[in-house]
Amino acid sequence: MLSGSQRGFTLIEIIVTIVVAAALSVMFLQVMSTNLTGSVEPLMGVKDSLSLGQVVEKITVDYNKLIMEDTTPLATLKSRIGDQGDEVINGAYGTYTVTFNDYIIFNDNNGDGIYEEGPDGGSGGYELLKVTVSIGTQALTSLFKH
Image (cartoon, rainbow, N blue to C red; front, top):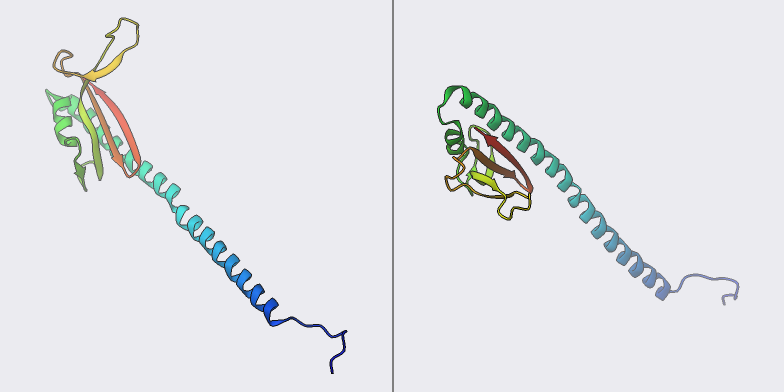
């Protein structure tokens, strides 16, 4: 016969402990896996940003050469970059998506001293080219003037 001073765990206590430990383990693993997979996103953003900077730098270098060599440097640059919506893969400037590539003009339509951007329908002489290129979630806009 067992005396009252001897104590142990009952089968129910052991089962409850195992179930609680399993539930906590599952929650911990879900939190950790989300953090681990999400930790890559900022690094990819930085990588895309650096790649995008290189693309725009190559475009700018090309434009500076075109100014010296070409009679219509903006038109040539516009055609080399690609059309809006194009995904350029390993092109002359690198890999990027053309978000915007067209001539613009700034007008003070209301006379309030605030100039709004609008499309250049020829009235501005096509002297200001707006180029927006993107990689992943990063985008960069440059203005080129002749």
